Length: 363
Image (tube, rainbow, N blue to C red; front, side):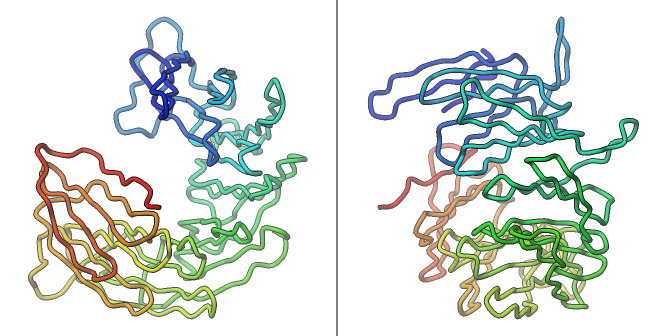
């Protein structure tokens, strides 16, 4: 599926026959999200996109979305809450939840026409808070909403619209749904806690783990096998990461060559790719000072291979078996190749500067 911003349409391409069906969506959109099963695409204007244009020619709405059924080749459009910012799919892609500033719009994708229900988040209409993150339980029963500048996590019953506030600790800065959908993990940066909510009983007291005192932890990445978590910060220049063994709830700090910009865990959960900032942590200079870098990590043994880079890494991807990663760098023809089995990093030169990288699934 491709989104065509210039023609306000979505193209559905049959990879077996190369046949293309082009379907019109509402005007002035710049973003699409696809359901995990590939059947549904939701198009909307995402104000957070770097090059988003707010120009108005004639009449323009900032509340609209278009639901594209890639099987039946139909489009259904609606006006939802102001400033739709993301879509969460649940219930085996039978339900879509559109997140906007003051509402959650729940779409039942099994009905014809699509049945919508609007859930009011109870926001102050004069000064609505900014929703930083929304997680939806796999059965589409509840949504957890983290707001910028609020210590509480809002629990939304998507069936009844009932709202509750959960204790998110002090300064919750990240919130993740576990890969199996059984838990929502909140990182409370100021109170140095992980608050773990049971999605089957979200009003029950959360399980609380204390994070290491010496670190300012604000972000979490969970492995797809749900056995490992990596905690780090992007708010300050700390050259460390905290390893969380999910089976034992054991947390241990690990040193790195530079502060963290981003972390990606391989699909099999065995390895991690840590992308570092150009800025350095306090300390004496070394070979990585004032250089871009990344670190390849074996999460079973914590054997690492930090490598210096000529320029900033911009895109990366990992094979579905977790064996290889590829990455591209800014204004650079070298494409990095990571072998997680050996932890070796090589590069190959391509004919022109790459802007994106992807990998075909391995059988």
